[in-house]
Image (tube, rainbow, N blue to C red; front, side):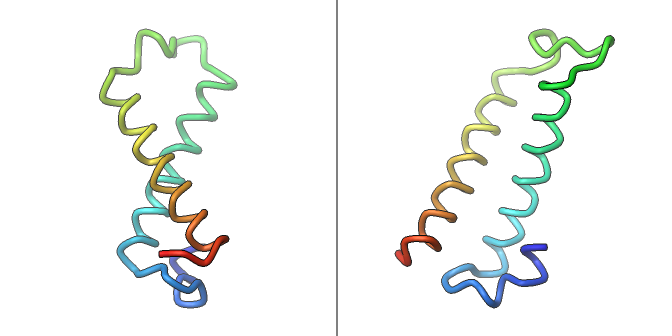
Length: 74
């Protein structure tokens, strides 16, 4: 959705919109399995420190982008 409408959001370039879309998709997918689980998926055994860092970096990027748009700052 954001890729289709990024031009309407002041300050969001295509590259940022693509990263927002990818980060949001990945975070949503991972959140679902963590919340609802799977009998053959044990989060503490499946995730690495790199996964944690990616999740934090992606979440921070999304938060900063959203804050910039909401507050009208760059």
